[in-house]
Image 1 (cartoon, rainbow, N blue to C red):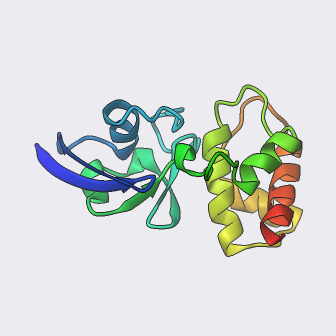
Image 2 (cartoon, helix red, strand yellow):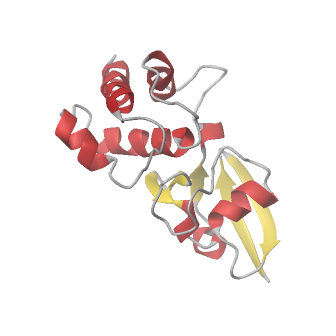
Length: 155
């Protein structure tokens, strides 16, 4: 067992975890924040994407002990004071979801992507979200949502 202290969505969380505990399991099972999804168990789908120290990461590829001392944000921490984050609003406005299973990871990846590329082309969006899979949509509305999110972030 190892003791970890991780700031999750602005709140310091100190827990004992098994050495092999994945960050995604710490978030979901230990903290009860179930917006971060486990989709594939192979790090291919991106449903588990969170931000760690300001960077989008697949939380199924990070051990909780590796996140010790880190600042982690999940989809639950993205909205502020009851207001959706601009990217969350964009996904809603543009219907950038269907079943919604991939949506939290897609949104977290988009927020990270738009930090690095605030005015992306359609090709850059497709390339930037390569690590996030959606099994329901044709990605058309997801791309529209990313473009809209970029617009809303610039306002």
